[in-house]
Length: 483
Figure (cartoon, rainbow, N blue to C red):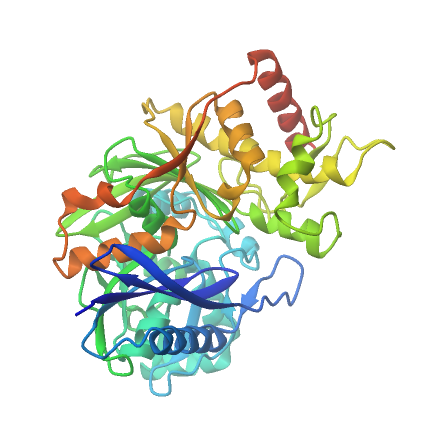
């Protein structure tokens, strides 16, 4: 009898379900839909959490029916999700009280700006994060301040607030839970104790009663009656991608180019590591062992490329962008800084906005597309250089995400980093990560087998001269200085 795992991959722009065959160790099928993006004001980003759940529910039903999966063949469900996005809902009805506030949203920038130096020091010390509107804590405070129904439910103990994973788990099982990776992105969990911190909760005036129970990634999160199986893994998307790319040893580094861009390096069990312009975050809690990562985040990566297509009509098909860039000898001084919702690490400029610099009358669509692709590599170099200041000896740098399908980008990335870059066989390693955690949870595999699932597809080696590399990067730094 065949046995399966159903993986829910809830991202920023789409949600999908993936069916994994345990015996063949293969992804058999995928079903999903795009998520509507809501922009009520400049730099504000929202989503309809109920729509997200309905997409997940529909996709799961379709994929299970299409593959004739019997009730006793589905061994478990794994969830991976966009991380800092916040949902608030009524514990009794399960209905959201407002739109979800997405991780990209900058509505709480002023709130963070007015935190005093001591508060920011405490946040960094206890959470490993830099005080920033990117993270969930200030978003939750904003909801409590601005949504009357949320305040009323909080007073009666009937408010639930959590990241997307906890909302989906609640809707599927009735349990109010999250995992350590998602909780570590809230500015409310102490990464040393792996629990909600009373001092941090007091800082943001958030009652602990409205927050979920924090569990290891490989826990039994509850029984899903609709699909007759248990949720057996929950892990944030970037941490899931680390596992999906086999980054489970100290020094392993992965890059993901999706809606945003992310660089994470495994730093083992050291929760006390302090990085001035970077984040220390929980990489995973599996089989009783917690690993940590140093992380740098790029707010706009492939989303900037989509903007060029959807808003500015710079190209027709995403597949064309690599050739458009390759057909130019160089960027001819054109740089694109994709700061649509500010700049993340290591710049941390919340008030920055996107710009294109260096254009002349000879600038074409190809130059702008190339500049956008190059920006992902420049941002990544800035992060890798910052991580390198702390003495890390990088192993292979593995890349996944939609952007990893772009040959120009990966070669340019290798050139700018002056380092070997390995394309993951699974361009969407994120979903593979939660599947692996689910198999660990179900005791189908052992931790030592994780790297058996992670294979490289293509290797890119640096070809650019040091002179050209420096010239390119100096131009980027000059462009950054203009915003």
